[in-house]
Image 1 (tube, helix red, strand yellow):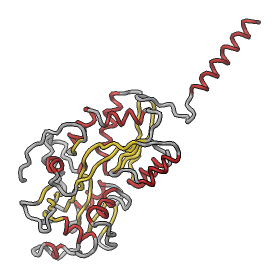
Image 2: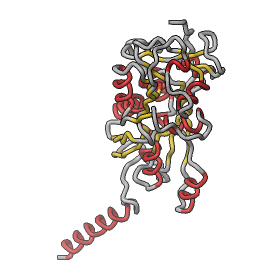
Image 3: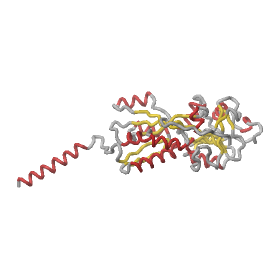
Image 4: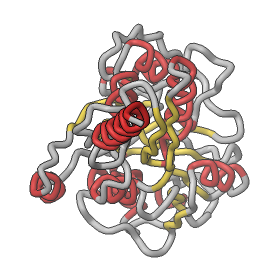
Length: 314
């Protein structure tokens, strides 16, 4: 009888210990195991997907489930504690940071890479040079016809196509290209994904598409000196008048040296006070292995040394 009571007491002690060892927040993931959901701007889907596949191959007990969405939604998910890691093109605002601090959270902002916005046109469109000034004129509605920029062009109305109205590409266009001015209601439309933008431009002669550079990659080209074949990529100039001499395509070398004028940073926003799997994945992204994946994608890694390949005119 005493032995039975002893066994019952032992099992009760084990059960209580197990209950007490479980974190108060109910999360059980560790630095290299468990399953988490992250949020990422949809424009980074190709590179994020590749990073996840390699990470899960190295750590079989870890699972990272991506939610590809708009930048606005990705940050909202982080603020609501629905995810503990988001990949975006901006840092947290002072108001967003104060929201975290009021709840005793102290998120980290880690630069992951330098990206660029690519302007793409239909392959039948002969106009592949453009200045930031003319992009601004198009986006604000000052110019609506190709002939207004290129006198020799057919008189076609310009349609600018973004991936999503709440995406980081739209925010960059408003803040960094238009100087805070709103986009024109007419002549600008939004799809849902970067791939839909590519498909639309490939079959629409008058369109300009705005997409993330990592969607351009020709996987067969390890030098990152060629792009997808179904569209043409525009060369962009920071000067008021675009010429072949002062215009650049979003090649990795031009992103690295700062010649391409539509470059933007990529950040990891991390709110993981337990230093668990979100931290583990973030550490992988900024490690030598993770940064080499970014290098191979055509972007500029934040920490990995870059061997720049000479760019030759196509």
